[in-house]
Amino acid sequence: MDSICINNKNKTQDQVQKDIENIIIENKHDKVKAWRESFKYLYNISTSLGYINESRLALNVPFPKFYNHSYTNVGFEININCSKPEIVAGVKTLAENYLNYEGKCVICFENIGSSKRDGLRAFEFNIGDTKYFRHFPPYPYFSNHNIIVDKNHVDQKLDHTTIRHLLELCDMLPGYKVASNSDKFGTGCTNLLHRHFQAGDHPFPVFDAVAKKEYRGQYQESSLFSIDWLHYPCCCLRVVSRDRDTVEYVINQLFSGWRETGDYPTLARDNQTFSMITQYNVDKGAYEFLLFPRHADLSRFVARPTLQCIKKEFVGIFEFSGVAILPGRLKEQLEQLESILESQSKSWPNTLAELVDGGTKYLSLTDSLEMFRDWLHSFFFTYYFNQSNANNNTIKQLLTLSVQNTFIEVLADNSPISENDSALLESWISQSNLNKLFI
Ligand SMILES: [Zn+2]
Image 1 (cartoon, rainbow, N blue to C red):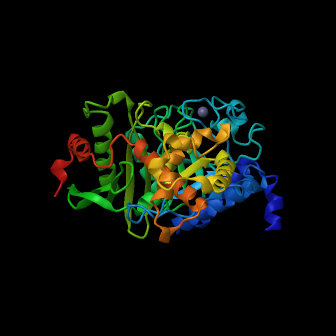
Image 2 (cartoon, rainbow, N blue to C red; image 1 turned 135 degrees about the horizontal axis):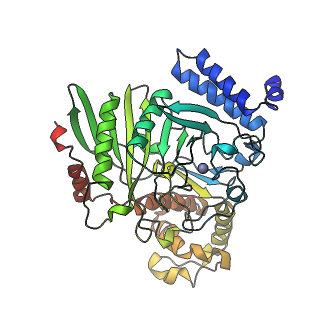
Image 3 (cartoon, rainbow, N blue to C red; image 1 turned 120 degrees about the vertical axis):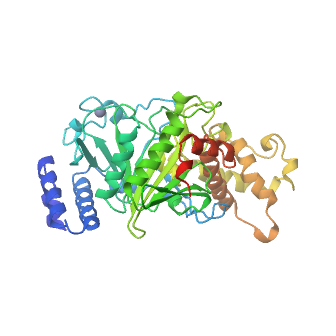
């Protein structure tokens, strides 16, 4: 291990590229091992060269998986991210890296190996005729978190090529989850200037969701597929088939039906977009492509004001997949709230009804914590006064529960198709011209 670290210190981008090509050739008979080994190598290089700072990653605060809700099988995850600065929806970030870069934007290939990104190394590869490169971010959210970037500085624009390239990546990296954020401002993508994917080797909770409605179909001779409308807080359609062309066809139809040809009286076509995540499920021998419809009307499909004390950032594809990445400020704020609530709880009334006006009379908050008042009233105090004596949770447990349920509601607020709006869902399916394939 020591010798690897020492050698890594001087690796140039060209050497890293060659080493990874060799790892892939050495493991060419085992595709899964090939990508896992190549990611391991790049992670070690990125930490040895100081691009990934593991001591900062250790500052993050993970909550336990959360199953206490109605969404069968889904274990929502919450992480308070103390390693990365908060990006507020609608406000351009001034973080140092966003102003200091080579090439045309922060993720351009010119940054690799440059003095502006000390220690950043990547692996280049092709999808068809398109050149891509992938690398770790400085603050990975989970195992093998990578950003996969078009080598050309072209707009982040979702189209049928996006879908084909995602499926190609599934074939290259079996079992790995490859995702795309949307291409409209305010719906989860922080860089709309340059096409890129997000990816991770993580069991994202949405993959465990059960179908509340299933459409089964057949495309061409023997290619069966299913479209599952998932029992999940935000709308998600999961297309599953053993045949890649079938998945591509069905997803393309749904894509067009939502944003290119479909007509939805309450949703302007220009704002229609998607977040998407996909994998080749090695155990099931099938492609799983999850499509989340999005709509970029920022007056409608964002977290409502009461929830923004917890999550004001863009809600991206990883959150839609069930992993909340919450701003680092919350670590201290939740500790302060816990301490204040503990000290004032003895003076509280007996029922929620007596706690009028957000509990102004019973709860004194510092100016910086005042933003939590409505949220406490909607979540924490509701739980506090409604719990039976036999189920006496601590103030800390109720705060945790409040944050967890807030995440679920943030997902719901961001979805243009609400949970029970089967009329809108049916309209989408029908305008995607798939009904003729259903069996
Ligand atoms: Zn760029």
